[in-house]
Image (cartoon, rainbow, N blue to C red; front, top):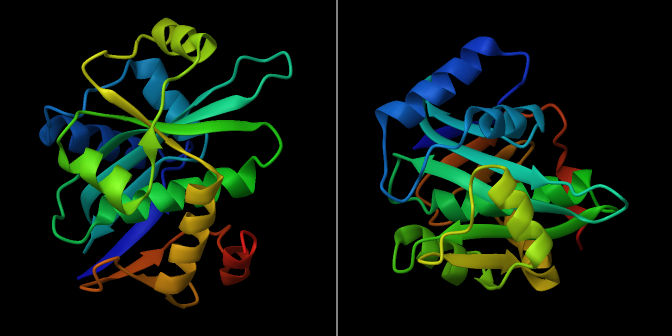
Length: 209
């Protein structure tokens, strides 16, 4: 199985429309649709990912930034992640790719990187067991920002955080999966992933070494 991962560009209206259509056509009880402003903000951040196979979308993964201003740290949520290509541990790969990109692009104002999951779900297992993220209790400021964005923390769900060890592991694992140029094997080794991102260069994998 060969997959292509690209950033959803803010100037690509068709790509944004296809991404939104994919989420609507592939609902999941554990993935709620965000308010329109949040979705647009995720895309404009450059952190949105679209996964395709043979030109057909098989996954969407978005990151939402929470910037309180006043020299406070920016929190990043690995949020909407919907994948229809099962059996390749793509959630693990995408989470680590998000952590990789966030770390490279914001090593100064970056605060916590977190995800919200329903207990006992595949997302919970993949992000905790394979990505290494651990249960965490967000501070009051982040809770207020998320509530003001229309997505308050659900007490029935768990919040997982990527600490420095998880960030280092993301770089190391991506490096171990790297084949050549922009090509990677999937975590289970059953397929190949190409990164269609102009900013990516293999030397960046050594930044976290």
